[in-house]
Image (cartoon, rainbow, N blue to C red; front, top):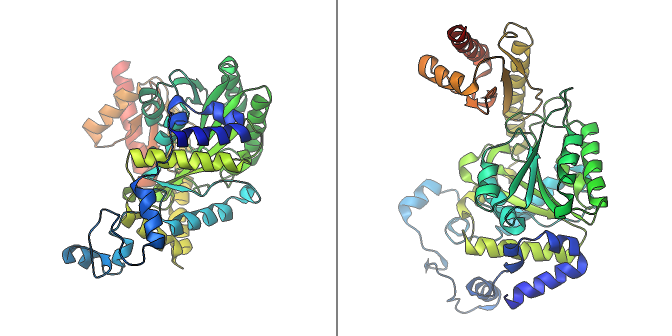
Length: 433
């Protein structure tokens, strides 16, 4: 094992042996090499005559660029577009995103957590977590209403063993007891990774304040029984809270709650700031132990160096300038209002009762999506029928559940959408009778 990795592991183990035990075999091997990037960083500080370290071309003390490209980006300084971004991301963006997190998550006040590290959006951040903490057959706990890509990121890539629990109770609330029992079912393994995604994809559900308190207490109880936990908050749709929900990330509530719990937040500008194609995400670690935060950051930088090297510099600049703008909050609130109205309209339409023979809907209060539970019609059969005969696209999740993204349907067209889904249901139900 590399000496730098050994040193990082020793420091983590001394401060918090539980976090060291959570690391995968790969996670223990990872470190940030003292190679070209480290030497380049030193040269950037001290080489005042000639800096002949980094692999870019320059002209007249600026990055070299094609004028035809710069014409489309005339409002930006070439230095904020063309050079490589630092592996951890632009320092100004990391600082600003951290300030944004503290402002939007009151529970983070006086908590100890790392500076956000820039990733190539959230999927990349999740894959970093998988590499750091998942060995083959490690338990990966998550609700049964889930984003399918989790299976690929944690299961196919790293060999995790999925342990699922029912997302909802019979009363339509988050199933905290089921979560706790799923974790304790793997107590003999000694560790588990649990992923909590709120607002949830596919259900569009976020816990209430009371449910959030119960979730944190349940996680603490599991830790007190001797189990080491990585608790991942996938906050892809952060901020899109409409009704009676928790109005911040669980990350702030979970950070520092117990030495055996390592809290990790994955978020980004992709969905919450309507910048999907820019692929700018962040990963943040929460821990009371400085050596743990330092070690995990350096191991993360090792993964970045060994995979993408660094995320897109122009995309980071665009995000940074957007968040800095005095119009940012106003424009973001306008988009939030549009989505909230669509969610309210969906509930109004469904609560009128004209579709009750075809489906029930799962509780939803946030995000982009909601789900229907079909009565006696196969979800995949309905999906393909709607595509072929009505030109309507939905997502089938299992035999009975479909996901509807109200985020991409105009408010005045939502009734027509559900009418067509209902007509497709009646078509198939008639064929089956």
